[in-house]
Length: 234
Image (cartoon, rainbow, N blue to C red; front, side):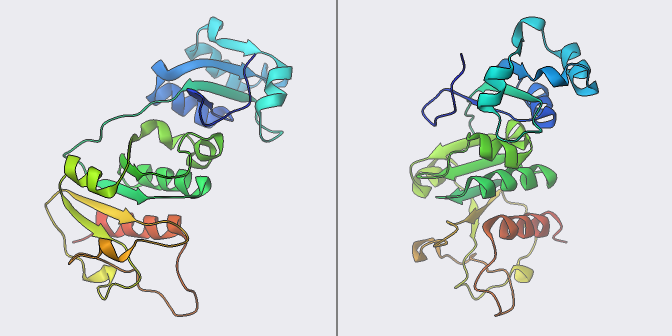
C-alpha cells in the first residue's frame, strides 16, 4: 500500500487529471502507477487516461485514494519517481536562493513554462520541490522543467558561469533600465522573508519599481514580472 508523502521518499504524487497528463506528456518514464477513484471510471478524463496508460499501472482503490488526496474533487493521483537534471548551459536560467514556500515554488515553475524558461536552479536549503503541494501549485509544469539543486550560489556559478541579475530592493537600478543582452543570463531571487543578502550585489542588481505603500512584492509575483520583462526587452 502506498504511504502518505514524506520528503525522504523517492516518489511523489500528482493530484487531478491535468497535472497527471502533464506527467505522462513530459516524464512518462517516471510514472510508477496511477490511483483512480471509482467515481471517475465513467468520466471523459479516465477514458483518455486509459488510452495512454497500460492497464497494469492503473489501480482502483478508494481506500488508498482517500488516504492520499488533498481535496475531495481529485479523481486521479499519479505516483511518480523523483528526478533531477543538469541545466542546459545555453539557456537562460532562473535561480531561487533558499525559497521557503512550496506554493511560491510551484507557481514560479508554472510562470517559467508560460514565458519559455525551462531551467531552474534551486539553492538549498529550500522548500521541497517535489512536495505534492509544489506539484499542485505548478499545475504539472514541474515535469517540463530541468531542475538542479546546489549547496551554494557559488557552486551554481562554478558550474554555469554567466551574467546574473540579482533582484534586490536596495539596488538603485530599476527593471526598466535593463537593456537587451545576447549573453546567457540568470535571474536570481532570494528568500521570501529576507531576500538576497548584500553579498549578491553587483553591477547588474535590479529592483522592481513599486509604490511605497507595500514593503515588497510576493516572490512569485516578482519572478513573473521579471521573466515577462526580460522576454520582451527590445
